[in-house]
Image (cartoon, rainbow, N blue to C red; front, side, top):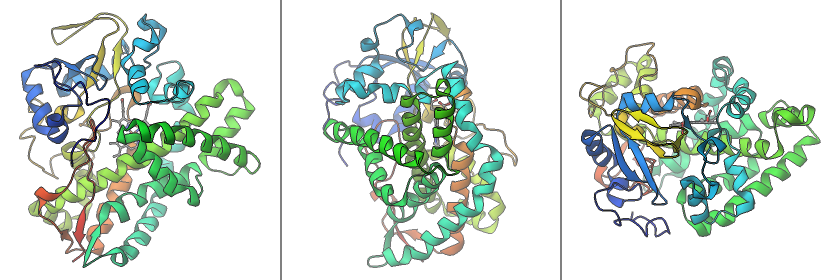
Length: 429
Ligand code: HEM
């Protein structure tokens, strides 16, 4: 589909020779486009969505280096940057997207937009809910939700064709994260719409949805206060009310927003992209069907090969830093390109080949699809588990499942920084 018109596309082409995140060519072919930039150099001067300059970091080693270097800040309005907040690309982008100024704090208050010590405090408050043991305990429930959705899948078929995104890839993670956080079932379709509005980058959708979402969370908190349970929302409320200094009002709302949105949009597309990749690589599919124990390694490789998140948030240099021979000046913005890092031939043999056996069993995290360093994805264990359950159960239930359209007709959403199918039409067998 064509890139939707937006104030962000107006400046594409204004700086010839400098890659632009909103360039339709980079959006429709990120593997080719960012791959070419990676071969041009580890640090390339480009342009962020609002057209301000940003250094694109394209190779595996350098991406990891920046992500664990405390001289790079996530908070665009950190005083250590010594710039006016309104000059920050992140804030300019919010303005261009029509974010009401008084609601800006709800984005800037997020765990992703903060650095130590605020980041450490926020991360500690929620990481208890995402320990490996808690996630393992959740597995039977994830499996149950997947079974229920798969039971119903044939009912959604029209002329024998069913859209996996609509009826499986989305509902599974949104159900899981909403149960974990404590979002009532009746509200979930609304959340899904808000999620879509946010990633659309369309000012007219964002400016309506974002305020509605904030109001809704405040209302949810008011209601839940009267009847606390053991869900994450109740835990956040307890922390806030018992010791206000540990979690502010805004932070509590922002945490709910971040977890629900980060927890379903991305995982849905890991399931979608992963299924599409397997169905277009019959040899790899057969390997997995013959040996379901391969699932964890397979999901690991699918994250590397076709993970749904292609870039991180911007980072800002808090002092002059030399990176791979390039001087990054204090205040400069840096864009980490995960997609080119995950296909870097300096790190992987034959990186374009999908190879489910590539990573040794019990592998360490050797891709950057979930980021790296202190902001490494909080939900990575949950997302991997959901990917394993989803793919494992889909293939076990419908062993003859196949694409219902030729692969070149699969439609991708034209949004920068992420890799998502608009739909995934399948024949179940
Ligand atoms: C952070 C990817 C699923 C919650 C991140 C980052 C990436 C990422 C790349 C780092 C961003 C940066 O450094 O700028 C993904 C992918 C997922 C996924 C590809 C699915 C396949 C989830 C889930 C949750 C979640 C299920 C639910 C809890 C978060 C949070 C952060 C984060 C809270 C911020 C962590 C921090 O700032 O300390 N994710 N994510 N993600 N993710 Fe995920």
